[in-house]
Amino acid sequence: MCGLTGVILKQKDRDNETLNRVSKSFARMLIEANIRGGHATGFALIDKHGDYVICKKPKDAYNFFDDSEVRDNIDLVYDGITTMMGHTRYATLGSPSINRNNHPIRTGQTIGTHNGSISNHKELFHKYNMERFAQVDSEAIFRLYETSNNVNDFLDNRLPKVQGRVAIVWSDLELPDYVYMVKANNPIQMIYIKEFECYAYGSTDSIINAGLWGNYERITIEPNTMVRVNTKTLEIDTKEITIKEPKQIKYGY
Image 1 (spheres, rainbow, N blue to C red):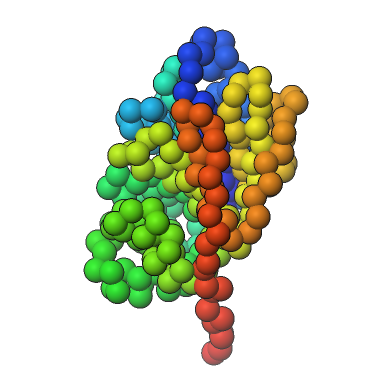
Image 2 (cartoon, rainbow, N blue to C red; image 1 turned 90 degrees about the horizontal axis):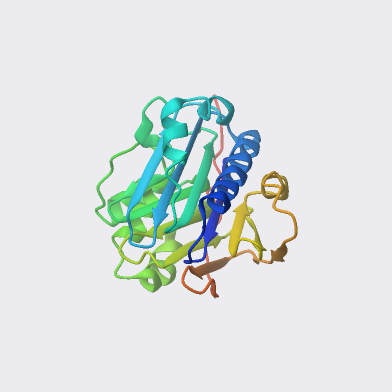
């Protein structure tokens, strides 16, 4: 069980006061997400040109924001940032002390976060002859996207091969106008905040509400759905997806 949270901003001019308010709301949500995993915390900031910064450490979210390097990175939120992608990790495979196991995960031009587990990750790496740089099963799903021909190839032909529990958010740095989200069989919620012209998302309502956003509109995402957000317009496209349930593992002595 891990915590997903983030903000997707419409491309428009914003003053520093507004950006600071959004940044603080994002930080509050990330701290609240610690209840879903305190082994590591991280975030990515991605702008409309595909430039990015990733900051992650093997710390719980409370101690994470006490780190001066983290505070310096969160202060990099500037006019042009479209995506603030956060994650708190409950480690099940791969030591958090090895930072490449923590999220957000970058695979080539893909930056993503995952809540869940993939039971056939070894088979997927072998089947598609994909390179592996970390120990975590989550890497497999972003390698599958990175090595697909396009997003439809990933959704139609590769994602259905995944066995496990999946909620993911990712951005393709070569297509920075879009943010993608898949709610398969793990939770993810989303709201629209008119005041800031942005979406906020989180694994649970309590994570979203920690942002103290004021008035908002709830966006319903059905299970087994891909959501694509256009950051130029904030228009949403959806597509039905399929995924296999995780393998049942029998334990014995």
